[in-house]
Image 1 (tube, rainbow, N blue to C red):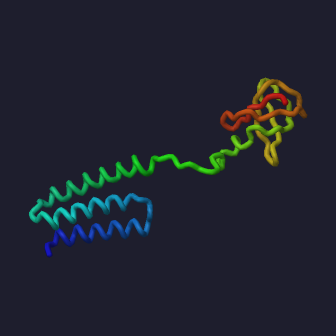
Image 2: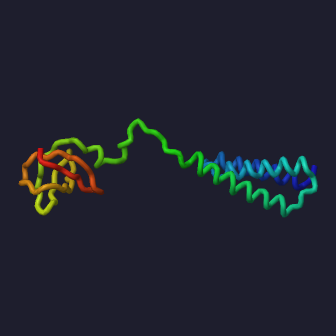
Length: 143
């Protein structure tokens, strides 16, 4: 068997093995490109080495771009969309102001944490409803 056929076959297996050891789908697509060049060299003997390498580079780039565009970029639907959005989980709750809201800023204790709140000026001890989030500030209105 020709050395170039063996080399492309070995590179294909090496890339698939690397993907198995460190999954991330990057080496997988390069392995598919190497497999395509392997088949081309096997079926069409006499392809110049520079053309083989060029085909591998182009096929690797194209396959990785296809992966990134079609598979990686898709939004996944979650049954818990607010899981890592702690502030947004609090919208709708009624809490008591720990400090008065003055000049649009105050503080409220929610569960075991203090949050900066923004809204109309209100005295400490007022009940407020959390109606939104602006960064790490809870937007409130009088209850």
